[in-house]
Length: 441
Image (cartoon, rainbow, N blue to C red; front, side, top):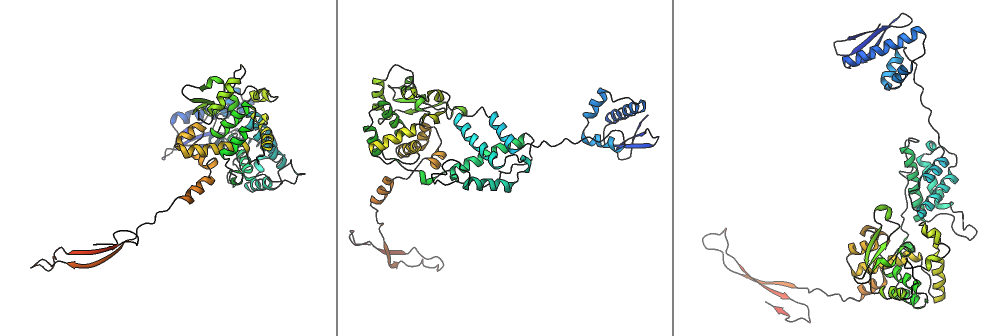
């Protein structure tokens, strides 16, 4: 039998005789009388099972498993139970977790999934079977340097640099940090080694180029296909994300009477922004009207362009497979126009630059489907017209006035030397030559 006693400080003690007939004391601490009685009955149940040589009953085993580590340790200290076996740490390799994470991310767009797959390939190539828990912050720094110098697989024979561009490097480090963050949340590791990895700027200023209106008008004039003319106008003047947004347009999205157009946005639909409404600008209207006049009966505005061999992938949202860049490069070469970097993105950036010069920035951001902050970082550019306008504006030379004091008239107030009268001060204001009058008093 076990007994419960309480000392002067309120600490509970449970005393009992073990199987070896020795008197032992379990120090329970400051607990309630009910909790002390419950713990006493547990001690008696353990002693009874041990004395009879019986296996621990399922009820008793479940109760012992439910004890906290501190109470269980006290039972171990008095020889009533054996120490708990520490759970062996699960050692998952970098490749295993990265590939499992890729398989779980069925919620992202096919384009994002393609980028994530490239990140997983890099992680598997560099870390391989290394355990997640063994990757230190210094190893993450080494991985970042490897991406910047030796990660490129394709294009080695063409003399291209073997490292990734700063923008691509920054995105892959961000995805790597996301993969490790998932491992932390699953209890596979305690820390994220990519938290402190320095990430380069994701904006490559060298590839940003403003596309003048004259250039796109020349290209449109040389293009016989009405769908391509409308596509180029929408990309340059309204900044549609090409091809996902124009290829998602249906004829019912165009409000001819109110001169507005509904733009479906596959990129942002996952963030609760499946569409936006923008004005049907005068630069775009004639091209859409001409296309509507010759368009075959169909749901989509760009029905024929969607009929290419990439249509099935486009239906799934994998717009990168449409390969419009190659077609545009051929059209630029045929028109005698030098291709600019990032063909479709710079058309969108040029559109936002022009629109922001004409309309409030918050309105343009809503029409474009981004924010003012994103526009300032990724889209808005300083054009040659800005420099020319600033240089041609006449600067007005401010008038320089020379003030000359002629004299002070007035006498102090009689009888009070500390309170002088209000003096009258005469001035001569000298103005620059060429202005009249030359002297004012």
